[in-house]
Amino acid sequence: ATCCTSAEDYVYFVWLYISLVLGSAGNIFVLYATIKHNAIKLDKMCVWLIKNVAVTDIGHILFLVVPTLISMHCSKEWILGETYCTICSLCRYNAILANMF
Image 1: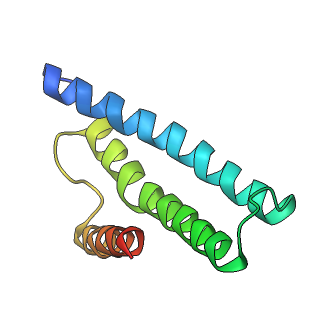
Image 2 (image 1 turned 90 degrees about the vertical axis):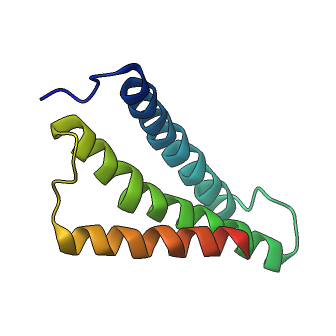
Image 3 (image 1 turned 180 degrees about the vertical axis):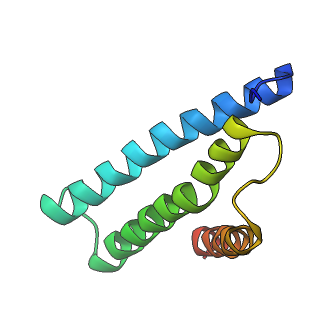
């Protein structure tokens, strides 16, 4: 089965793929720049917050974007099981809360 049976599916699949690539690259760059080179010249609490948001975004990508891409690529329904679905849901809400506060 193909993932893109309609225009909406295609747009959603492309959006997820772009989110995967740009989100991963951007957040890894932020972590690298702040940990290795101390590139962000703010107080320690702000840098700590930026690092935490980057780690949370990477977790969001790993636990929501990647599984959704896998499911869309293989079929039109969730194929990764009930337990992983629950884990992904908990991680999604955790990422949303971490980015809000």
